[in-house]
Structure formats: C-alpha cells, structure tokens
Amino acid sequence: MLSLSFRDETTTVVKKYQNQHKSLEDESLQIFLAADQSPPGLSSPQSLFEPINEVAMAHFVNSFVSGSHFDYLPGLYSKTSIMTPLQSSMYASALANLARERCESDMMRTAQSYYGQALRQTKKALLSEQATQDSTLVSVLILSLYETIALSDQMSIKSWDTHTEGAVSLLQLRGLESLQTDMGQKLYIQVSNNIRVSCVQRAVPLPTRFIELDKQATVFLDHSNPVLQFWPIVDAFIHLQIMDRSRDLYEPMTIMKQALMLEQMLMDLTNGLSSLGVYEVLEHENIPKEAFEESAHWYKDHRVARLWNTIRMTRIFVNEVLYEQSSILLETQIPAESISWNAIQLLATETATDAATGILASVPQFIQKPKDQNLHPLRVSTVSGLVWPLSAVGASKLVSEEARKYAIQTLLVIGRDARLPSATKIAEKIEIGAIDGLSW
Image (cartoon, rainbow, N blue to C red; front, top):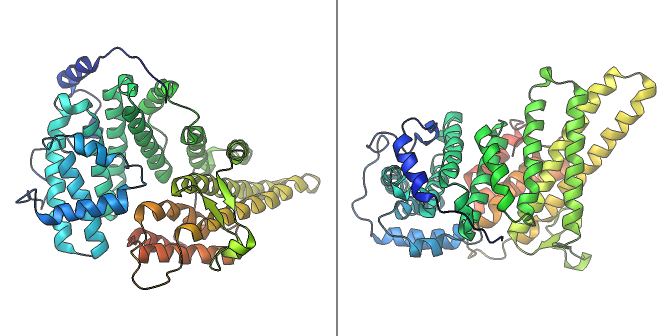
C-alpha cells in the first residue's frame, strides 16, 4: 500500500463535529445517536465475563472471523481498551452467531442485551474524541454484522438507508488523514464495499456525499488491488439496475448501450485477472464426482473465488439485460435488421451459461461431500460468499435447468450444514419464482 503523509487534523475534525453534530447531515447516525435507553426489550447483561461469552468469542473468531473481511479483529481487539464499544459489539455478534448455529433463543436474548449495551457505548464514542478511532468504526461494522445475523428479517429499507448514510458520515468524519495507515486503508475499502453492496442490493444510487469522498480517497489507495479495479464496474452496474427498473424513462437502446459497456468492462477485468493465473482448472482425473458436468476449479483461497464469482454473477445479470433488451428491439426492427439482435441474444445466452458453469465449478473445493457424521459444520466465512452467485445461477432464465437445480441444491446444503438460514430461504424463494431481477 502507498505510504502517505497528511497533516494531522484529527483534533480539529473532532471538535468541529462535536460543535456541529446537531446540524450535521447525520440523520444517518440516528441509530447510534438516539435516546440513551436501550432498544425496546433490551436490558444490560449481568456480567461481561460469563464463560459462555468467551466460548462464543472463540467460536466466532475461528468459524466466522478467520478468513473473512474481519480477519484483523483479533489483533485490533487485543490492543483496544475494554472501555470502548468494541468488546460489547463483538460479544453481541459472537453470541448471536453461536445462537444461530445452535438455535438457542436464550443465548440470542443475551446477545440482544450486549447489542443494546454496545449501541449506548457507540453513541457515547461518536460524541467524543473516540469518534475517529479505528475501534469505533469497527464497532459500527460489527453492530451491522450483528443485525445481519440476528435481525435481517426485521430490517426495513429505511434502516438500510440509515446504515448507508451513517457509514458515509463516519468516513467523512475520519477524513483523508485516516488513510495514512494500513488499517485505515483496509477499513475504508471494507466500508466502501459495504456501501456499494447495500446500494446494489436495493438498486438505489450511491450517495452523492460518498461519490465525492471516494474520488478524493481512491487517489491514495493501491489500485493493483482487484477489489478496487472492480469498483467502477459496481458503480456502472448500479446505474444499469436503475435504468432497467425504470424502463419507462429510458429507451431500450440506451439500456442496451449501458449493458454493452459493462460487459466490455467485465471482459477487460477478466482478461487481466486471467493473466495472473489465480485459479486452476482441474484435470479430469482430479475432478470430484459431485462436480457439476465434470468441471471443477481450484483457487488459492475462498476470497479469490469470491472475487471471480462476483464477476461471473455480474456478467449473468448484465447478459440477462442484453437478452431482454434485444427481445424488445427485435420486435420493433424490420426483418433485415433483426439478425444482429438474434446474434446478441445467442451470445448473451452463451456468456451467461459460461459464467454459471464457472460459479458451479467453484463449489466442490469449498463444499465437499461429507465422508462421515463427525464433520464440523461448513465455515460461514468460507461458504457465505457462494450464496449470491449461486442465487444468480438458480434464478437465471438463460442457464440450463440442470445448472439451476444444482445451484438450488447447493444453497440448501449451505443452509443446512453452515447453519445459514438465509441460504435456505433464498433457495426456497427461487424455487417458487419469488426472486427475479438485478440484485446481489
């Protein structure tokens, strides 16, 4: 990463925030800056040091944190005072994660108590000089993780809007000076990813404040990072989503041009990554028998597979738009001009099929067929990255019925063996045709 040199204006920024926080456009922080009391029904835990907390924490670090975007947590936690909200937020998420796996409602209620405590502590930190500390931002990220684990079915669109705006406000508050450390850069990338994914999942534009900040911040980041190389594609994809869902405002050809531009961007990125040889196509004799159509890939780790599969599922969505818009244009063109639209439809189907095959080829490495009954559950941090790509395959109208069924069955395996109910729910929705359109 780049070595940066900024003038330290942290104190100035914090004082300015403290003096102006009432007028700051921080409605986004309302979840943390609400009244002092806990959310309804939440009470403070009796002890921070009950054995179950440490058991849950150890399990959380080993099964969820290790290999995830939160792999920095153990190091940060060991250096952070217990007076910060980080401990309570981690206890909340750790207990919620273990309660989810064991289906224990009493443990989930204990997690809720820590969640209430962490909210109060985070509010206090945001109104103090702790506001710009790494541990405060990480506490907010962990609270969001808790809500994903325990409250996902209760989160409204307004709540997600609040989270997104709150994340932008914290990035602004921390300022560009936070990018002078490796940790600061890592957190900026993680939060920026969260903001983008949130907007993709809800098909809403990126906040204007974030776009302006991102233009300044990305200058100081290492653009050899494939994740950063993917950001322009995500931003263009969000615009395509909005166009596709507002077809009465856009001509089919305008939507088609946006999709074609995106497909070219995806091809360029894929070709660049391919030259790095970041995954291996297994030879026939090494392919597990449970592989789809005798095709399997081997990746350096699940994070590399997640990047490739994110690219592939984006290509599936983009080519579905190309196919649909070609169908519309095909109906309006005279016969002599219809050949090109048929060709685009054929190419879109082939591209989506290839992308789906690539996603399914990553399954055997991370979801091995059980050989005995004593295996541990699948690691959530490893298999969670497969859920949305598999849902893209399962819901696609351009791939074969066999591929769709394989994707759905794999989602059910993840839901069962990784104790991940969201995977099961997605599989069930796909089966009844309740998932459609451009979403991750």
